[in-house]
Image 1 (cartoon, helix red, strand yellow):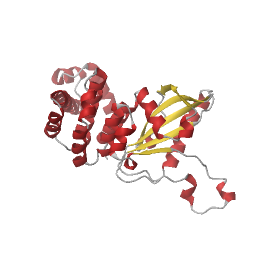
Image 2: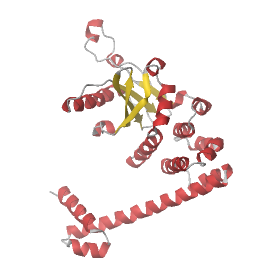
Image 3: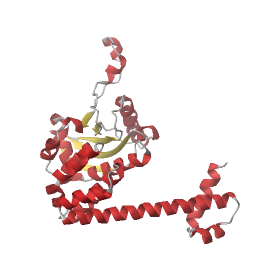
Image 4: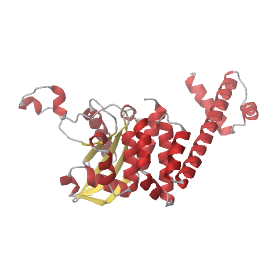
Length: 307
């Protein structure tokens, strides 16, 4: 999966789960009820610290929330597996991730907090959720004492039917967002399911917040599938005039941004060639209409890459 597609999935995941009320409902209805019973979800507060290293970032993206569990401070980490295939050794990556969190807390002289990792997975193949110790084959009790042991909560959309996803949650954003993420890798099902979400989509379009989320949905569908905007437009037209108009507006903005990025990239490539031939910043600015700061940054990047 190329970086553009990964970023597309990540962006929509973060759009869906950056809403505190949506996260409260999602956590309360998906993870172990015995844990939920002691969580004070009203204390949820997003943690903006970046804990992913480059290696883990290639498989997961994350959203971390601080929360109270009884009288204890904990971190609830929503980790999004953005590959269509299940991760073979998730515990190794999760252990590294949790160590990143605790190392930073130690460095900042903070109390260590337990971390509840929740993996959200939406690939076609079912995730094999097994214990850490199962990676090592048959071990006697004495040797098992040297193997780390911890669990993670798994939300695998393939284990839910489409109706279950729609009926399980009160939040319209969760109903629509989860159903689309579940079916994003099957374009035939995608078109079929969007038509079945007409009630929810029309309800979203009644508020400004809902319209913004609908825009996120539209961008996600256009970037993550090969379905044409005309085909999506046809589906939206069957839902309502408002859905069609909102979709067309978003598609046009996305197309304009794509064209602009293409133009900017072309200008950057011209600037690089001119820098390599010794042209001054002033001449490059005059011929490309790039800003002085942009040319200077391109020059620094070029020099660093050619040291």
